[in-house]
Image 1 (cartoon, helix red, strand yellow):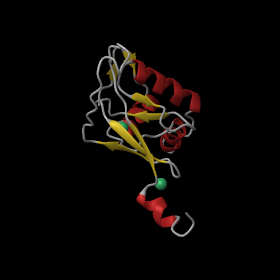
Image 2 (tube, helix red, strand yellow):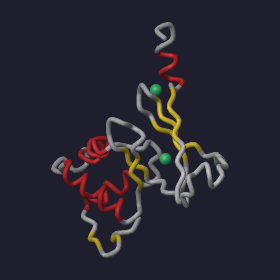
Image 3 (cartoon, helix red, strand yellow):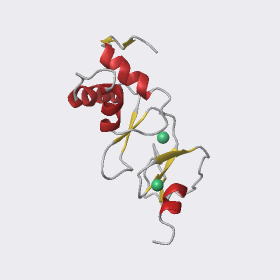
Image 4 (cartoon, protein in one colour):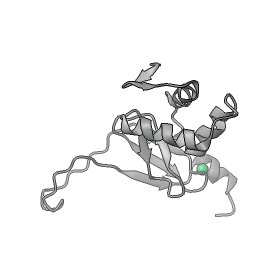
Length: 135
Ligand SMILES: [Zn+2]
Ligand SMILES: [Zn+2]
């Protein structure tokens, strides 16, 4: 991992956040990142995590996801992809397959489309098992 991002000095705390996020497919929230990094850096503040996430977002290293309606989630995978979220445990998983939807110009009200997102909401196998008989 790089020690500097576009001239921004990476403190050990920021590096730890970056290390935690690199290759992370769990779509962590700010508080998940804070819990993970504060093990190594007990003095780190939630504000530092927030500002680092904001910085990484503005530099295009991570995406912010709004699929979890309760809290912002962070995605270090910035390639275009879609997500499925469990409505109970809020686990978010990447859908690797491309989803093709063809709409005519008229159906899109003449908009130039620059980005498409498809979000799936469901109940994951773990929660299905736990809730068997209660649904
Ligand atoms: Zn679940
Ligand atoms: Zn993702």
